[in-house]
Image (cartoon, rainbow, N blue to C red; front, side, top):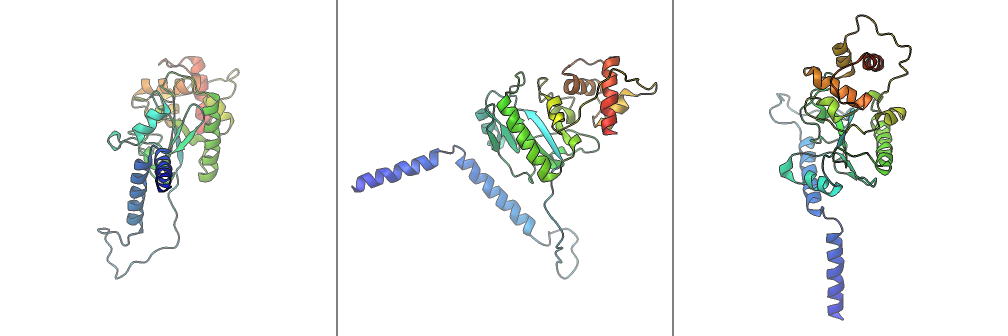
Amino acid sequence: MVNKIIIIILAVTFFACSCNPYTATNKLYKNQAKAYGKVMAAYPIEDTMQTAAYFVGTTNFNMRKPNFVIIHHTAQNSCEQTLKTFTLQRTQVSAHYVICKDGTVHHMLNDYLRAWHAGAGKWGNDADINSSSIGIELDNNGFEFFPDAQMQSLLRLLAALKKNYNIPQANFIGHAEIAPARKNDPNIFFPWKELAGRGFGYWYDDTTNVIIPPNFDNMKALRIIGYDVKDSVAAIKTFKRHWLQDTSAVLTEADRKILFLVERKFN
């Protein structure tokens, strides 16, 4: 009887330990979060020119909230591979959310914390996108369409983030937008028009009767939208990937009409 009880206990223990393969990394996450909590609770912070005899804590503050949502594709071959990548300390990359092809959503980091998903990049005057954004990775090797189950989960998540943090419609963008010279995600098949129809990003209107002003400046328009135009070819290609599902580097007159209409949305 005793042996049976021991076997049952061992089986339950094994099941409890084996049901979540990320138990060890979850422990590291909790320890790191606690460490940050101690830093935030400390007062006064050392070496900040505190000269008064005592600390006066204000009663008026809250957590910093995200202002952008950056959408990526994982450029890997499975959700499991991406989860492993984001739980290895040596990779130095992470995201707040990973959405698998079957629609499963993995929330990997508290939305108020800074993930390492954007890297070096710029959108408008913001040159530290990691500090102001939520990163969402879609399981996709970079050359695939995005399954309906995955897109439905993404749309539900975006709706919640927009509501919770009052994120402006213009601030739902792709990784390529902030780093046009080095990134191309989400890939050319991503349905930006569908997202814009739900209030996540903008789309252009009918161009049939559009007349472009003689003084219309392509690069100025791209800058107003938010693009870093230091590499003008990369900026054009990224714009066309998003709004035309095209990766060519030349703006035709038809393309310029679309650019003109999109720029008016941001102006």
